[in-house]
Length: 341
Image (tube, rainbow, N blue to C red; front, top):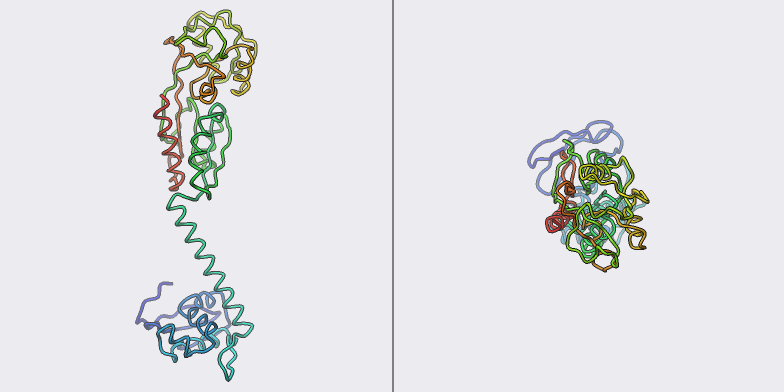
């Protein structure tokens, strides 16, 4: 209920009714009927809490009133009304001052805990608003995990110790499902299907190329033709996968029958086999970002137009709203994607 100054208000604070007048710093109870209830407890979290707290701290109504800069009679009246409302004494009246009763200690301790929790809540909300704390759930394709994603999130998390970041590796279908249903905040993958439940935040086309070991004959070339694959041992994705379908169409249009020795859905396994000299594979430059940086593998672009580029997309739920920290991470990924063309 919204309380307005200088107005008579009737509220259901108890099992019966209670009416009061809210005037300036005072809440003057006119009538009270019934037993203490949750709503009555909520009223104690108003100005009255300051009165009880001050009297408990300073041991007298007079000293509390001086600190609060209000009349001692107002403090005394509030405490007496609250005690009548609750049916319990909050203070013992002693010759040398006021002392909390057991009930008063429970009330004050509970209020202080609530105040501390509210302060913590507000601090956490300020952290979220200031983009130094919050939760982000990211789902992505396997090939992005070796270097592209780690580089971004490592730098991003370095200045955000309260960041709660969860990253999962999923298939394209699972990425679409997780993002569209709100199980993930951001999704990152190649050639994700268009879906009205998702919105694209950033995208970039990536040219496919041969990935070879550093001592392979292709390693020093600037480009290759798809036909150069003839006679090479190929390590490719499994048949039926979306990426393999793209490759098979390009091979068929170029009348090439690749020599496939191993198929695997694992990008890391294919790269490791290439590194070990078992054969060559086809990937995007982002897939081998860390490997080409350290010189363990080489990426050689394939010049054929028959081989389409792969589109890397960053997506979010179309009807959702990103929290500040989620939006900031999306901005970092968008910047990285824009420079990865």
